[in-house]
Image 1 (cartoon, rainbow, N blue to C red):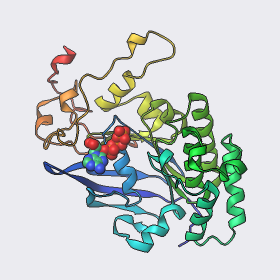
Image 2 (image 1 turned 60 degrees about the vertical axis):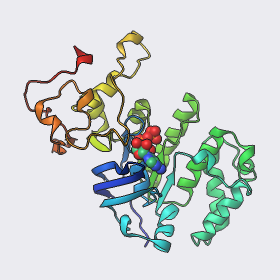
Image 3 (image 1 turned 30 degrees about the horizontal axis):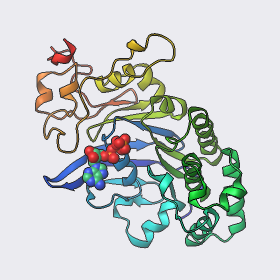
Image 4 (image 1 turned 180 degrees about the horizontal axis):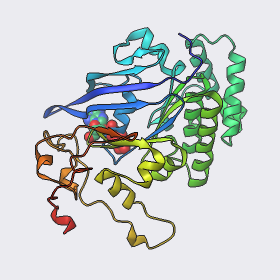
Amino acid sequence: MTRTSAPGVRVKDLTVVYKTPAGELPALGGVSLSLAPGTITGIVGESGSGKSTLALSLLNAVQPPGRIKEGSVEIDGLGNVVELTGEELRRARGRQVGYVFQAAQNSLNPLKTVGKQLLDLGRSHDFDDLPALLKDARALLGRMGLDGGRVLDSYQHELSGGMRQRVGIMFALVLNAHLVVLDEPTTALDMITQAAILKIVRDVHHERGLTTLIITHDMGVAAEVTDSLAVMYGGRVVEHGPTTEVLGSPRHPYTKGLIRAIPRLSGDIDEARALPGRPPTLGTIPKQGCVFRERCPMRIAVCDTVDPEPVTRDARTVACHAVGRPATPIVPKEYV
Ligand SMILES: Nc1ncnc2c1ncn2[C@@H]1O[C@H](COP(=O)(O)OP(=O)(O)OP(=O)(O)O)[C@@H](O)[C@H]1O
């Protein structure tokens, strides 16, 4: 199916589990999240919060020992990708959903030049005009500060980590997919190159009318490029809304903590306050109650037993019992 405009995406009640020695444990516990057509959404959160698992789910690409256990991912023009299999799924990946996964630096075939891999990709998606594909690839690489012709003639080992990362971004964009998923696309790049590449991602997003999802550890990156921001913790989206509002007036105590933990360029470095405690692992995510309560300064009695439902108010979704509800907090000892 051909689309000419940016698709909307609706993730609903998505539960993804990984098989462990302790049984199947959820990395995503009933996540719901919508990406509005034509917007750039960022996902932030500490390591292990489920960001990559969510990105993989958008392509139905969670691999064993993981599996999508429940829920749906509706993409306009594609339907529920959780139900796609075989050839339908293969064709959707790349052509309708462009992507860079976290290990993009190591995902090239070491035995073929970048150009040969691009031609293989074009053929596998029935591109008639392969010269035009090469031209577009050269142009994208050129915009990202690389000599496109030389990169296309290179093997993986001839490229630095940062160059491979830009090749990954080129592959995500070159088939002209209208939904693009970028998982930590710029981690191997220095700050200046990172800013330049993100500007290009944003420009291409606008030029081609895309819907884009960017996963990042970096709140600065999120602030710079995204329209909308989702904050993940323990396999949940705990807050989601317009980026300026989420960063300017965070409502969830975890979002507040993340923002307080960012060191500022000006001012006292001691003003950046690390969040006490550690994020949970699969084995330590609480089976009942709020997943953040152990680290939460706003904890109240109900948090121990009931997982808070996300509540949407004024375009902002927050999953917290204490937000908007006056109550006596049980303050963890680290805060006293
Ligand atoms: N193949 C796997 N087998 C078992 N557990 C896994 C596997 N992949 C991920 N997990 C677990 O699932 C949880 C979510 O992982 P995920 O990679 O989605 O988080 P993340 O937020 O992307 O982390 P990071 O920022 O470090 O990439 C983590 O607890 C992780 O250890």
